[in-house]
Structures are given as structure tokens and as C-alpha cells.
View 1: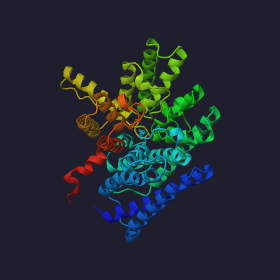
View 2 (view 1 turned 45 degrees about the horizontal axis):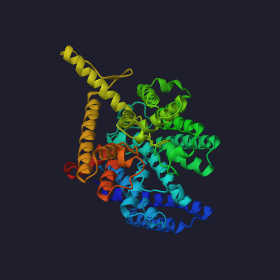
View 3 (view 1 turned 45 degrees about the vertical axis):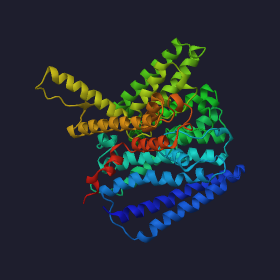
View 4 (view 1 turned 180 degrees about the horizontal axis):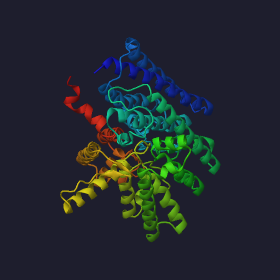
Length: 483
């Protein structure tokens, strides 16, 4: 364990992260909203902390080993969330406690989209912009980690894509070729963001709203600049732009990379995870639309379809944008949508949840066990497409699922123990661990009504979900710290 290497990287990360305070300062000065002192102070504190960490160890150029990688990944989200909370805590409006500021910051960076702020429409423009930017940066971090870093640490859904993923996959140390992979992913992410922003702008959003919502759409974050979320715009064109880009952002970015490199759209259809992802989306859209139609939730079938389509894709990909108060929809529809977030996006996407490929493997493994009951001596491999999945990967998926269920249960019980009603507790944990955002019950619109202990439990849930369970829990085991 090379703590000096971790300290050096952390110092660099903080110094780079301090630069993200500069765009909101420009927005604040441009709109003259008076919020720039909070960002200037946050910039100074973050830069100083980064410099103090980096300067004493700047000449330590040891290789980053496996254990160091785990620590860096966890520190990336925890430390940046803490410093990211500074503008919220220092700003005059909204006046947030440290708990609320940290909750808002970690919700942004993990692209969860759960908010404790009420009255978004009245906030300074720079604070609104900063919330959206946090999600965008978090989304980029997720992509680089999921596709380039986590597979090398031997975890994450992208393990299954070792053969196809660009760049090397050595397990002993993190190699310089990661930068090439990260750069390619960055271009795709940036291209999607620009296209999404243009789409929103052409569909009728103001330039400020178009940029802000493009940031949180491509990051599958769900933060909005309005309390009514997407429902504020009341525009079918805007909803459809959102649906397209949420769906695209829920696809494995390594697959986008392959399509761009091979200049062939058929690469999407050749991918088993993509086909299953598309099938699940279509089924949830159909069920939601029919559920709304038969309950006459909206006046016309067209309205039921548009809202059903948007909410199914938004909740299914764990984006969490809303066009209506979906938590007040008929019980079957609301629960179906919440359960769809457990599957979430594809591995290597900005989506949360268990991930489509893991869900597909769990089903295939279940079917194999049923076949084994009939043919006890048969050797039946688990196959995805034309690829046989190694037993080690299948075991890892079951291990992930077991830890996921156990973690969910413990946090659900903890929330219930603090006096929160069961529906609110269940959906709050589900929305946090799946990085979804809006839940049911008292957390349908926002999380402002929860007390501080509940917010800290949910912060842990967001981090656990974003770091694919193993990455965070491995640091809590004694064996990790033994030499």
C-alpha cells in the first residue's frame, strides 16, 4: 500500500477539481446574481487543500498498485463530494446545513439526482448551473472508471467486456494506456452532450436550460433547474429529445466507441446486453402506457403514451427526470417503474442499478439451474451471445447480487428504525443505491423532509451504488489493510 502515491493523486485531483469552481463564477458575474463570493472561497479552499496534499509528495513517482487503486477510486467520490459541498454551504441562498450541502453534492457527483433544495426556480443562476455541472463531471468520472479503471481492479460489470474494451487490461498496475481509452470516451461523452444541448435548444428550451439539462441528461443525473423538472416545459418535443439521449447514455460507452471506430451501427444489435436493454425498455414503456390508459390518468391516449414513454425511460435508465408526479400515479405503475430502476443502465454507462448485463446473467444462470434439475449430469455453460462466460464471472455476479441485497436490507432497516414510514424508507434506499433520485411516498418530490441521520444513510447508499458495491465494501474489510 503506497499511501504517498494515493496522497499525490488526491492532491492533483483536488487542484484540478478546484478549477470547476471557475465556470460558476463567470455565470454568477454574467447574471449578476451575487453568489460569486461562495465559489471564490470554495475555489481557494479546494486549491489550498490540493496543494498541501500534493507538494510534500510531488516527486514520489511509484506505480499505482491494485490496493492503491481501490483507495483512489473511493477517495475520488468522498473527498470531491466534501469539497463540492462548499459552495452550497457558503452561499447566501439557499442556506444549507453541512449535511444538506454534502447530500446535494454527493447526489450530484454520483448522478443520483436526489435533492434537498426546495424552490429551485428562485435560486441564483450560478448555483443552478453548478448543480448541473456536478452531475456532468460525475458522469464523466463514472464512464472513465467503469470502462478504463474498474476492470483492472477486477470488479465492475465491464469485466465481461475485457476482450472488446479498448486499451490494455493488466491487473497488477494501472497503465498509461488508460489515458487513450479515457480520451476516446471523453470525446463521445462530449459529443453526446453537445448534440443533446442543441436538441433541447431547438425544441424550445432557453440556452441556459438547454445546457444545464444536457449536462444532467447525458450523465443520467436528473437534476433540473426547475422544481417541476421536465414537466415545467410541458413540451412533447423536449420530452422526446430527453428520451433519445437518456436511452443513448444508458448504453455501454465501450459499445459507442466500437460503433464509432467501426463506423457500423449494426455493432449495437450484435451486442446481447444492448438487445436485452432495448427489450426491457419496450416492455416497461408498454406496461406503463397501458397502466396509465386503463386508469385514465391523463385525458388522451397520446398524453398517457408520451408521459409513460418518458417516465419509463427516465426511471428505467435511473435518470430520474419527471414530467408529472409519477409517485402519485396508480400503485402498479409507480412500483413497476421503481423496480425497473433496479436493473438500470448497461455496464459502462452513466446509468445506475444492478446493470443490464448482470441481470441477464442472473436470469441465464437461473435457467441453467432449472435445466440441471432435469439433466443433473449435463455440462451446461452460461452463454451471452456467442461467448461462454467463465465460472469466475458468474460467481462474481452472484457475489455482487448477494452483497447488493444485503446492503439494501440493512439500510432499509436502519431508515425504518429512524421512524420513517416503510414505503418512503424502501423507495428512498432504492432511489439512492440505484442512483435514481426521486422515490415514492415523502421523497417523491424531494428529500428535504428527511432528518439528518436518514440523509447520511442515503449518502452512503448513493456511494455504494455508484462504486458497484465491492469497491467501497472492500475498504471496510480487515483483510484489505493487512500487509
